[in-house]
Image (cartoon, rainbow over all chains, first blue to last red; front, side):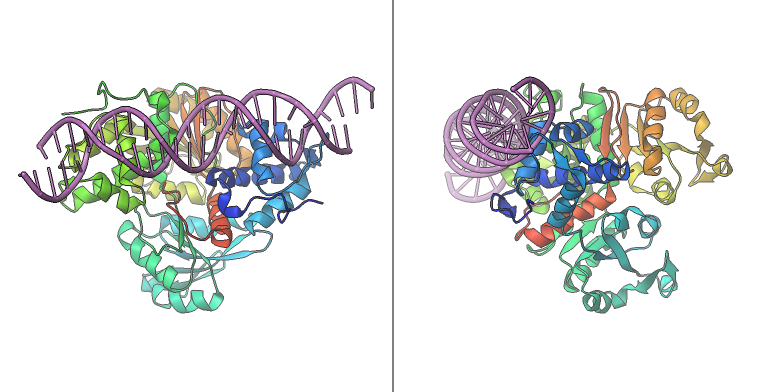
Length: 226
Length: 226
DNA sequence: TAGATTGTTAATCGATTAACAATC
DNA sequence: TAGATTGTTAATCGATTAACAATC
């Protein structure tokens, strides 16, 4: 019964960043396989679904230990659980959201987060009239209470969905409240202390990448999947 | 007056994919600089804002030609225009949206697209009751009319914001209508012909990446910025 | 057994960085 | 001029791929 504290596992810092991105995709596929009642899969099968080579799938997983059975492949449920453990999403992560505009509202109602082990537990906006209301049973507070509430709830992940000119302020508030990871949907770079992790998602940039490819590239290999 | 058809430029197919991602970030920063009235910048300055080295900024730009002035740096407006030309966003791209749920509605109201040269010109949903309505002045049609409308409007980029189980159908429809690039927000991998470009944005996966970093990584280097 | 498939090593390929002459 | 900064080459570093013994 191999696992992520396998002696053959590579220290996490030495795992290429791209591997972590693909790991999420493997997890997603495994979850669909399980829904369809599939018990086992293989590196070839998983790779074909996602546009990667079988070698790459095996190598990626090998960074974390030995999960497969020669001659058989991988047991879907076992591998899914192993990957969830690597991400820490076998347990629930409470998340805070700042900014209840169009995008913020959509995020509050998005089903996909809870399916992957994340739950937005509190939301904040600067507009007084939103304070005290709820969306999808999630309470909205005035941003003045952000620090107190987030530090009390020991929330470690925050989502920024405010206008660009408020993004740095929102990020600073989150960090002061003890958040360690920030998912930033504002199309602006925020400057944060070195120990804080940031992922930026700029919706227009995603289209830009696509526009470049469509114009200039002939055959797309596997493009960004997450 | 250097430009992207510079003789020193590398063929687009040989440009590393990661470079294109960073190019979008350079463009975004340049636009903010211009708003602030800054006339010139340098590879060091641009790099520091984004967490890249000056060498990397210069090397990235060098794939496309010579845009800088030794001893001076880069003229913001000139470089911005050059990058826009590379992306093709000096002209407007019409875009189609499929799926008017929470996320679709947010995308219809999102200001960021038009700022970067994209415009959602038509939207589609399977629910009869939405057909004929508009959001943000964008007409919503029944998905039965998707092919006719998109091919007539010669739309080349499509956005998928439907539930996972409808994503493959939506993608197929878009491709049949002549779309060449698909931005997919459904948390599922869609299978498409080899000449079609896809970018997948899975909101939960972004949080997963963050969760991994927060748990296992000490000092984040520059993380995904777009 | 034969066929399938793993985990791992070594070889290849690609991307980043350091260094520096050329330029303003 | 001296200081700043580019574009580019060569060296380094990192990631992917091919090959294959081991296993079921």
